[in-house]
Image 1 (cartoon, rainbow over the protein chains, first blue to last red):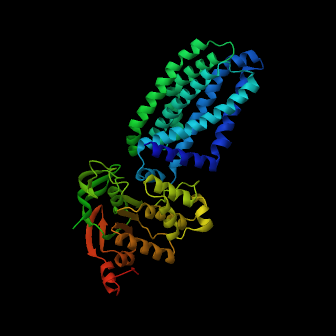
Image 2: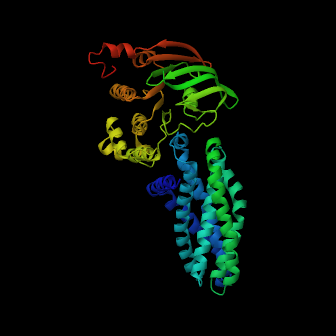
Image 3: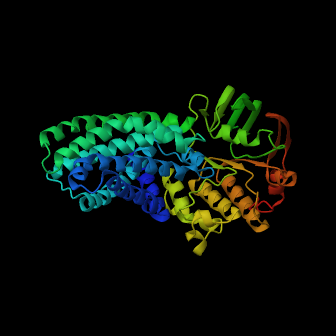
Length: 223
Length: 233
């Protein structure tokens, strides 16, 4: 399973590096959203700083939908879905590989978006470990739930519009918990309160990883 | 007789439409079987059923000793499928596509290079993204991926379609080598002369059923070659 996961992740990341769709489309959308939030909230830095954690994770959340759609667009070429089914790769390995590739893309995106937010909104992380742990757990949760619902909608003609409808409500707990955890990691934030939200992010990520490993095979067959 | 595939009264549905409506067919190990029939006769569905990609709803289907009604995925590492669509990743080059297929099957990676060379995908062509290849070149890359996996059962949907005469001869030679190595080949075609020329048996499908089975010309041609047969013309 792990060997297959590495194989699929390497393939997906190689395709992304080659096509640069994530670089030229997903990342700019996330950065652009920062400017739009800033325009919407006005020039007051206090308001921007207070809203920063939520806006950051909102940008990541919408980027997750784009990254997952892209991950399944790779498999939508003529016959590639059948080829993947016939490849002999363990479906759980396909799931974990896709989760790893999407998670890595989201991690890079978060670094860029946070750098932009630091410049635009003037916010700084005071408790880096909390921000990092929250990011890791939230990213795994977003990627695993996103890939699972991506597989669910992959075989449908309306997949592009159906995926956000399915996945955004499911990811709402991650948005809430990650925003609160990050608020605790920022200047003047409550670390204790922020740490408490890790107890939402951890189980969410673990649950969707397990469910994905178990269900991806049937989804691949029926999609 | 060792059996590579055996179907008995096999019924498979594509949606609510019966793609196979009671197929009875036995394919012996090491045999080359050509499947012909008009459009919609069930040729592609037969191949997909044998690969475990199309569920058989009633009757029996046994491929490489596995009951595919119980576990459709049981034989997937052991069969090689060439469909109408090449099944390649457009943003990976020919070499990367074949290497991915080989690694996925757990086969040695060096087989990828040998297969590409056998199908004439060499030099700059091997480094061109699959999305920029012609239809014929994509088909050769897809066939190289099948060859590199060294499957026990080859399921080929019109493997000669869109290929020039020279490449067709290479395909025939590759299939012949595979059979000599112990593999079994089932391929579909619309070309009667081709079916008769390189197959041991020609099966005609109509309306999702086997309508006719007749001997092909492969055995006769092999017998006519003095050294016991090194090629099939």
